[in-house]
Length: 145
View 1 (cartoon, rainbow, N blue to C red):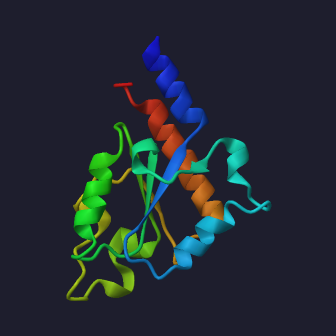
View 2: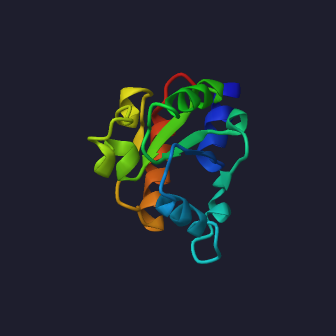
């Protein structure tokens, strides 16, 4: 019974923690656009949380460089499992412009498992909403809840 309650809560009220892994802030501006009255994702139960310990979804933006990699891994370890990870933007997915940089630590999925890829530079809010819908579908398919 508790497993069904937990799974139902994750599919109706997804709390998102934003991990800024050295972004250029274009993605961050698009994420903030989701909270404006035009898109208002809070009406769907999607909330930005201030602590990874309360998050159901980690939203990682920016290029994962060697200095920030330890922090990204620590935040992932602090997030209660099962946790859905979304790579937001071209930098988090592939490194984009920074792929040949000396400080680039590799794409995000090289270090932690990524469930949802939201592409673009920067992705539009509609793509973010579609990515969260895909994340909710992944949560519904989880067997261990």
